[in-house]
Amino acid sequence: QAFSVNYFLVCSIMWSCSASYLIDIVVSQSLQTSQNRHDGFSPTILRRKMFVVCQLLPIIPSVMPMWFKAYGSSGVGWCWIKKGKGPNSEYEYIRLFSVYFWNWLAIFYCVCNYWKVSRAMRKLRENVDHHWRNDSPWKVLQLYPFIL
Image (tube, rainbow, N blue to C red):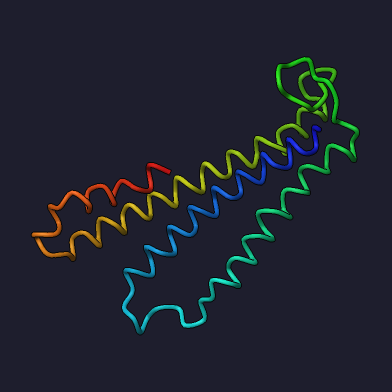
């Protein structure tokens, strides 16, 4: 049970990063002219790469606690990694690497990516006619990355 909880938690983190990445690709390609776009872009290959990263990479932090026999009762709410003896036990580092590291990495990546997309949307909005610029769909579309 602890393995599946850890695995699917990290999978969901990876899939949220992939959604952020796809938004970035769509916005950055819409800003490029037709001759500057990536000619080798293939959605099928991208989907396979995303599947490998989002479904197979989380196996590593989920199996790692098994190597150290760290799965078990911690006595700390919902956590499934054993509580060690002392503040610097190896279980604390396993807990950090198996869940929290990926969570903070995803937050940092998504915030940076959404900031980049927001800047690109602002740039795209400046290039549109004045009539369309003040239209409400543009205002909503500019805030879209922050909704996710």
